[in-house]
Length: 345
Image 1 (cartoon, rainbow, N blue to C red):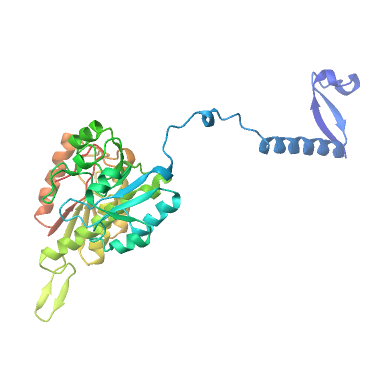
Image 2: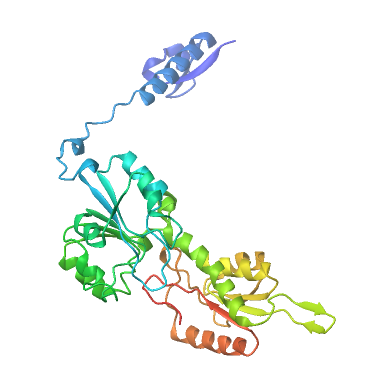
């Protein structure tokens, strides 16, 4: 059975192209037709996977960095009142040393509040040091909170004064809210990595410490509120009478807000949620909470998963809604965060 292929007119014979016009048809055996197509497909496949990338000129550019083997990592005690967290665990201390870092200096008692003993850090390969030694020798300083500008009760210097010039700092920084801190770091020529500034994208998910801490904060906020509320969050029917369930309003339905809503619902409270972003309505309702809205149609979705600053009219309507809710609810939890640095108070 013959197959047909289109050919340009000059490749066709006069008898083949008669009555057909400028394009003629030529009879080609099916076996030869399929063989030619297979060869073409195979050659394209081979050329596709044998493609050689052009020479990478970036590899020839000298890098003026410092090898891991020459870098000292420092972990300091958090000076902020009530702060119990530590920036590095013993397990990650061992991991950094395995990666090739020169040494990990841990201030004495740095992990005590987080229930990590100095002996745990020693077993992991860390070196227990004084506060002064950690700040003076650390090429990379790890902290949970940003360095404090004020002097501590037991120190003659503030944390920002102790940070070594031209070193690297990794911590929560919140630059929009701490402009004076940023200026001090700039004067010292410190390279600062703000863990709160990590973008909310798939590639950076393992570095998203802000969302992890927000999840804890939302959960803890409900527990703290329940502790001082003085009544059950869930409804109770007893021999002495009936106790109605607590009503909770959560403002903001981000990571912290959704965590607070879920926790309050699990504890039996009646929960209402509010957010300027209509897209989170389904998330709030899926957790069993009522989603509150204002009459003004305005979307508060901003960049990076944060809310944006709303118009004056929207804020006025928002405040009016909150005033009405304050007359009915027992607990209000605010979790609003805006990329510009504003937080609801």
